[in-house]
Structure formats: C-alpha cells, structure tokens
Image (tube, rainbow, N blue to C red; front, side):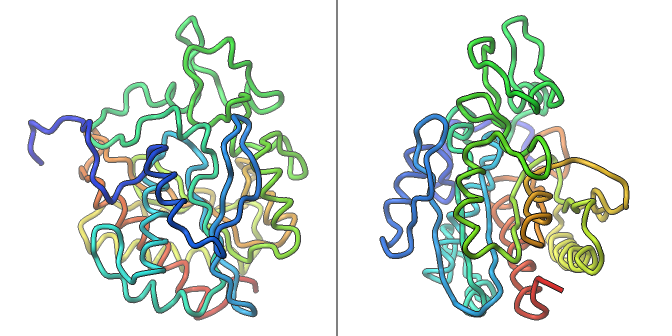
Length: 318
C-alpha cells in the first residue's frame, strides 16, 4: 500500500453510490423490469429490479440497508450490469454469475434506505474507523452518539441530532432493527414486506459492510437452514482468501443463543426465508489488508455468486 494514500474525493465510474449515479442507473433499467414498491420517509422512490423466472428458486439481493455502507449499493449495480451484459461495470467478465442467473428468479433492491444513503459519504476507502459509530448511529448536539437500544422502541427525533446516522431514515427510525418479529417501524421495510406477500423470497442476502468479510447467521434458524449458510460461507471464504483478501472463518451467530433481532429474522419467521446478512469490507486504512473499491465490489460479487450457486445446486428451502 502506498503510505501517501489519502481518502478520495473522486470515485471510479464502476462505483455508483451517490444520488446522481444511483438515479442514472435506475433510469437505465428497462421499464418492464423496474418496479416502484414504495416511498421512503424522506419522499424518495423505492425501487426493485425483477428478473422473473417462474418455478426457479427465488433469490433477493438487498443493498443500502445502512447508508454508511456504500459498497453494497455499488456492487448491486455491478451485479445488474453482469445480468444484462455478462461483465461488471469495470469490464470484468463474470460468466458463472451470468450462467447461474438463468436458473434463478432474481430480485434486486439496490438501495433499500435511500434516505440514509443520501446523507452519508460515497466511499470510506482510505478513511480511519474513528468516528464511524456516529456516522452510523447519529450524533446528538452534545456530541454523544445514540445507542441502538435507545432508538429501537420509538426511533429518535431528528431535530435533536446534529447528524442523523446512516442506519436511519429521515423520520429517525432504524432500518434493520424491528421492535419484534411482527413489528417494524421502518416504513421502507413495511412496504417491502407488503410487496413480498404474494411471492416471498426463498433466499434473501442483505449486503452490509464493516472491516472484514463474513456472514451473519440468524440465531433463530433451525437446521438444515444453518448448514446451507455454512456451505455458502465456506465456499465464499475459500475464494476470497485465494485473492489474498481478508476473511473471517467464523460465522457470527452460529450458536443457539438468542441474538440480534433484524429484518432477516422477520423474514425467516414470516416466510421461512433463508435470510442472512453478508458483511463486506469498507477499505479502512487501519484494518488490514487494505483494499480499494475494485476489491470491495469483487468480494460482494463472489458472495452473491456462491449464494446463487447453492440455490441452483440445492435450492434454498429444505
């Protein structure tokens, strides 16, 4: 790594994560595949892109749940480009993804929380992890950071905050923390759940970001759901490690203990969906090995590819 590297102000064309880039890519989607399923708390349109294939395993790929995780959004638009052209926005071919797509029914939600995405930086490559907690969770006027536990029951008042974090919509509600398995205060998820009722996803991969690559298992899963996630994790880990990229072998939540209640738990309980978050990298300078935007996109696409492979080879629902 070049020690003179500093955080970028300009981003590569294969990294559409700002509102202008997002809107341009959404506008380019053929009308017959683009569906508006709702409106965010801040009045932004909520879109999904469908590639229907009746009778095939139904895979949903979700990005931008947290606004401070821009690589997930950029990677979803790279995935969509592969599905249409066989190569990502860097011009790199992904023949396996293109081939597997023919055997799946795929829905992509490229920006689940557009309010949070609009107020956060478009890349954290070259940044330090210092200050990330406030970027995610909001800073009050006294410079303290809002705790997740405070925000779950009733949200937070945006008027009492000097920066509303990326995990929140413009009304101050958390994107990924339901009150219980039947209740979410996040209107964006309420609308998505209503859309899903007619044909629920069999698999739902929710792309997130932190310092390293790893999967999170829903602690409420029974077997053999859990074994399916272990298989995806093992395959993804092997391929990412082969590139020299960081990967944690541990699957967070691979115990029978109670744990975090998130959107994936609601989907598992309501629909029996194999639903899980995948954590990609952010490119922080103080978490090694360092990576740039191209590495981050590749990591996400590998995780998506291995998730697709399991659906084609085994199916998602036991």
